Image (cartoon, rainbow, N blue to C red):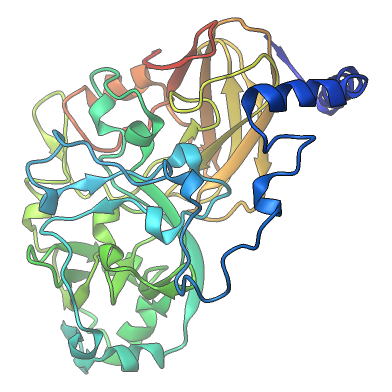
Length: 421
């Protein structure tokens, strides 16, 4: 196993090109004869006919050849489909934006079918000018568009005691990143005139569960968005149509979907979802609560159980990192289970509370490997090992598991999910 810089990468492709060039025609003829008439040097069939015309699909859809890039569920994970979760296919995604149709789902009482003409947002409680706003009212306010991730705090939670899921989609797929457009919550709160006694905001959804969470006023006035659009179009029903809260960097359940009510109060409401649920059971039997921030995390995506290595030689190792505390500052990669590390390159946009893509050139010689990534954010927080996390938190929680993850690469190129403390 060895690392490959720009020079060795160029040499790799140059050698491959020279070796193939002298016998290109012959090799392609043999390949076409053995594998299909659409391969070089033949002219493929799709070049010999016209394609589908404009307007045949008023709303676009992916190619039929990308049918495996879909959200998936784990049937045994939750009791019923209406209170369940679907996982985003991280192993298939490019860049940092998750397509709206592939954004993970988490519902507590199914997806309500809401008529936007009859939907209202109520803002009341400790304020001087309570309001009831229509969707038309909301889009008249000054808007913002920001790229932010949303992550369920149970992301990776099935792996606390040991590896269970042979798929990146199931170990890390409860996170997605979108461009959200809407109104700053601080703008709306300025309209109602917050009472000085108010310290908290209750956000409630219009689903059958009336999903609600208490949010400190300081956070509400900071960076929270009341969003009506996602990735350039109106939010989809499973993501909260026609209106949702986007609470950057915090537990996904605080980004209330189908938002219908905001109440200002002096104290948190101590609801079901912040007492018996979304609390972290500690080794001594006590439980942490109001642990909102999604801690720094990362995972390698180009090599994982769904993306095995099919050949030796040069590979660009890629993955994603994120932090609810701020920006990703650095990502390191290990090929020996954490004994040695090499700094990866941060690619593209590096934004606050958004997915950040990283990469490292690697030349695989067929040797087994234990691949890990370790992220560091701009506050200095370093992604912990599993042993470090368990030392503090034990193994009884299902939330906030952000430890370094290990993929085992076998000599065959097959990739396994393992725990390497």
